[in-house]
Length: 258
Ligand code: APR
Image (cartoon, rainbow, N blue to C red):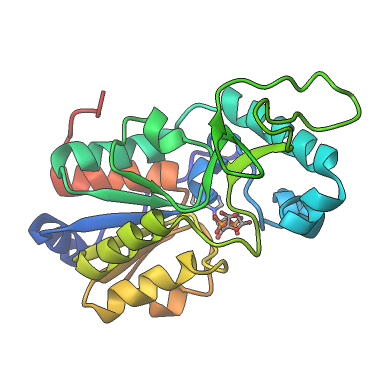
């Protein structure tokens, strides 16, 4: 019978660094939502990319080739995300913001679970799957008719196909989001890097950029990543266990964000 994973001991030096920090930020990836039942991308077998080919589903070319296939796949993911609840890891980051108003969450996730947990300062680098937009001019639409069994829904204004408001491979990130993320990485004293394999750019360059500007990098991940040999602190474990322990160790029982 497997017992609940134990939180690692939080080093005293890290506790001191977080208490003294003038500015902090977190970079999060799919791993923080794993405990909410949202599959990650690269985890062997369980990750999305083990089952689906990203080049068939998450590129502009794939959409041009088969908009219906891509639409249905995102509709399936949107349903998954709609069922998911934020977990203790999301709530812990929201609690850090409650105790440190300038705290910023920079997320690669498109699930909106940080905001659902009460985080107000969130930069979405890869968009949000809950939003849908016109593929021609990017206008966000509130409603759409996807009853057609043969094709993806179309924009009521111009007739172009609708698509999820997410960033696909080969596409550039939203300018304002990237600028905010870079500023936060440059200015922060501590960057928490939570649940990301750090393999997708430009998000994966943020920890190196922050470290170059003097920040302490804290990796929170049950497994090593390609970033692991370039961080200052490593907390091995699921973020839903590690982050609440970190918050309690540094700030005591911080009231929940909501
Ligand atoms: N807590 C913390 N980390 C976890 C947990 C957990 N409970 N479970 C898994 N992880 C870690 C894995 O060890 C892995 O390092 O989360 C990481 C997930 O990595 P990926 O699946 O590669 O996700 P991510 O890094 O967010 O991917 C980046 O790639 O596919 C694109 O656009 C997509 O935003 C995504 C980007």
